[in-house]
Image (cartoon, rainbow, N blue to C red):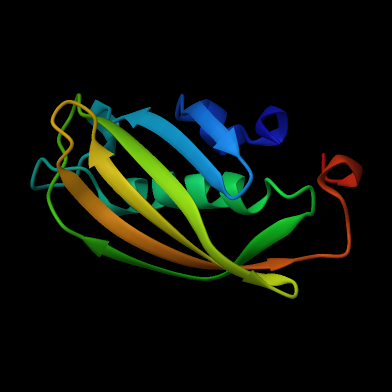
Length: 132
């Protein structure tokens, strides 16, 4: 999946863990990722959490997409901060699932955001995904 994930590649996200129902990704906040207040734009924090969610829910060998997502921003991140998003599956039922993601600053473990995503699997294996 990472080979086709241009967003993760362009933002230099690093996958540090993947196991069934779990994923951990890292990303460094760059100069172009901060808003007018000098803090990481929430869209980038959300994107990191959403990416960890995507890798966790696709760890079951079925093409799975987001059906819903919510985020709570807890603390600011700044240029140079390395953020780590840890996603964990809470439950799967039928073709749906619920995943929680905690985004922390790697240097001190401070929670930056909490994310919850709902997933929906398609009737297709990840390896058979025809997407370019």
